[in-house]
Length: 125
Image (tube, rainbow, N blue to C red; front, side):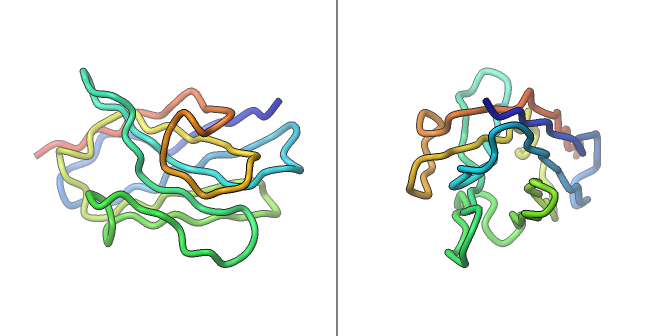
């Protein structure tokens, strides 16, 4: 069992920045990857970004956030971050952290094993 706790969401204006954090605890010894997804009202989960827990494989990003968002990790703190710059109203959603133990850096929400409770990000125009 892995517990994920997100933080860092909030209400910002268009063009502002936010940094989300996701702290993992529990059986984290077999972490392969962690990712971020988001869900806007009335929409399905949308992949945002994913990163391998070890090694230097290039992280994955959704086309809609590439160049504006940066995912990073701190293995010592069992924490993954999502730096979000140049935020747009279209980025408004609940952002979820996800954890995966199986091999493969993937973008489908069904391929992740544990999820956080989500943190709200609201971008006003």
